[in-house]
Amino acid sequence: MPEHFADRLAGLVEERQSRVVLGLDPDPAKLWPDALSGDDAGGDPAARAAAAVAAHCRAAIEAAGPACVAVKPQLACFERLGAPGWEALAATRDAAREHGLLVLADGKRGDVPVTAAAYAQALVGSTPSPFGDVQGLGADCFTVNPLLGRDSLEPLVDAAAEHGAGVFALVSTSNPGASDLQDLDAGGSPVHEHVARLVDSLGAGHVGECGLSLAGAVTGATRPERLARLRELMPRAIFLLPGVGAQGGDPAALGAAFRPHPAAGLVTASRSIVNAYADRGGDPAAAAQAAAQELRSTTWNL
Amino acid sequence: MPEHFADRLAGLVEERQSRVVLGLDPDPAKLWPDALSGDDAGGDPAARAAAAVAAHCRAAIEAAGPACVAVKPQLACFERLGAPGWEALAATRDAAREHGLLVLADGKRGDVPVTAAAYAQALVGSTPSPFGDVQGLGADCFTVNPLLGRDSLEPLVDAAAEHGAGVFALVSTSNPGASDLQDLDAGGSPVHEHVARLVDSLGAGHVGECGLSLAGAVTGATRPERLARLRELMPRAIFLLPGVGAQGGDPAALGAAFRPHPAAGLVTASRSIVNAYADRGGDPAAAAQAAAQELRSTTWNL
Image 1: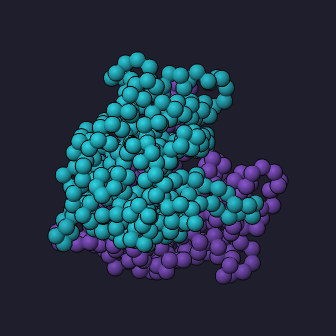
Image 2: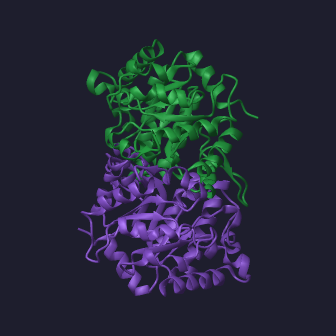
C-alpha cells in the first residue's frame, strides 16, 4: 500500500512549516507577462493560450511553491482551453511534483456511483483499455461535491485509499450563496452539519498514523465562526480553507481549524498570491513569493 | 440573440416525435468491436483508446441517433483519457451535430461564481486570450450541481441564455444515496424541493415561446412518485429523467413529467441502448437502433 495521504501531507507540513496551498486559476487574459514570451505565434489560439497558461503556472510554482505544501489547480480554468488545456494541467502537475508539492485537483466532482468510479480513474487511478492502462491525472487529492450522498462518494474514497490520495468534500463553501442550501435547517441542524457527519463517517476507516483521515472537508474561511463546531463533528478531517485573501477571510480567525494537528487545516489562496504584484508592484514572481511567505508565516504562527 | 434553447428543443421533439436522449458513457474496455478496427497500433494507450471511444460514439450516434433528440456524453468517461479524451469529446459533439442532435454535456459542474463563469466558458462560451478567443465545447445544454446556491448557478444560467443553451440542475438524482442529503426535511419540505424552487426562480426570466424555461431539472426516473409534486414546483422546467433502463426506472410511470408540453420531459438512457446487443444478441448497431426506437415509441405514446 502507498503511504497514507494524511501522513504524506503531515510530513510535508512539518518539514516546510507551512499550511499554504497555492491556488492556480489561470486566466489567459491575465497571465504574468513573461508567460507569453515563449509563444512562437504558431498554432491555434487554444494551443497557444494553453502553452502560456502552463508557463505561467510553472513560474508561479517556482516563485511561491517553496512557501507552500500543495498546489490547487482549478480544473475549470484548464477545461476551458479544451485538449490543450488538459495538457497544460498535466504540465502543471509535473511542475508541482518537481518542486515537492502535492497536487490538489479542484474539480468538485460528484455523480452517481458508476460515474464517480470513472472520475476516480480520471483523478487518481487509471482506465483499462484494449491498448493498455490509460493513466489518469495522478492527483494527490481532489475536491468532491457530496450532494448525491454516500454511495456517490464511496468510490472516490475507496480509490483515494488505494492510491494514497485524499478527498475534500464541500461542507461549507466560501461564496455568499452557500447559505441557500447548505445552511437550511434540517431537523435541528443545518444541512452542512449533516454533510460533516457524512464526511466523518466516510473517513473513519481511513485514518493515518498522524491521526488524520483521508476524507477532508472544504470549510470556507469566510465563515470562521462555525469552524469550532465543524471540528467537533469532524475531529479527524483535514480542513481546506478557501476564502482567505481576495474573498476577504481573515487568517487569524481560523485557529479552530488547525487543532488537533499542524496539518489539520490548509489555507488556500490564489489571486492574493499570484496577482500580488497588482497591489505591491514590481516583479510578479517576487511579489508572489513575498505574499506566499507572509501567508505561510501568518498561518503557521497562529 | 440565438433561438431560445427550449424552442430549439421543442421543435426537434415535435419533428422527431421523440423525447429520448442517448447517453454516451464510453468504457474503453467495452466498446463496440468495430470501434477498435481503425486502430493503427501506434501512439500511446490514451490516444488509441480515445480514438476508439470516438469511433464507438460516432457509430452509436449513427445507429440510435435518429430515434433521439440529443446525446448526453458523460464527461467523466472522456476526462479519464486526458487530452486525447477531450478530443474524442469534441469529435462526438461533431458527430451529434451532423446527425441533427443536441449535445447535453453531463459534467454536473458547480462552483463559486468566478469559477462557475469559467465553466460557462468551457461549456457554451469562449475564453478571451492574447491569441484570440478560445472556443469552448459549444454544448447545447449541460448539467449543473446546485449545492453552492443561487450565486453559483447565475453565471451558468446567464451564459446559457446568451448562447441559446439550457441548464439542467440536479434536483432529485437516480442513485440510492440521493436521499442522504436531497431528502432531508428542511422546514417542512425536503431539500430537493428547495432546490426545485431555486430552479423555478432561476428560469422565470428565461422562458421560451413554447412556455418552457432554459433552467431544467434532473429528476431521477427511479422515483416517479415525486414527479407530480416537482412539476407543481417547476411548471416551466424541462425534466431530464435518468434511471430508465439499466437503473430500473419504468418509463410508463413518468407521465407527470411530460405535462405540460411534449418537450417538458426527456428520458435519458445509456447502457440499455448502447449495450442492448448484450441482451438481444446480434449486431450492436442494429440492437441499439431497435432499443432506441422502442424507448422512443414507449415514451412518446404515454
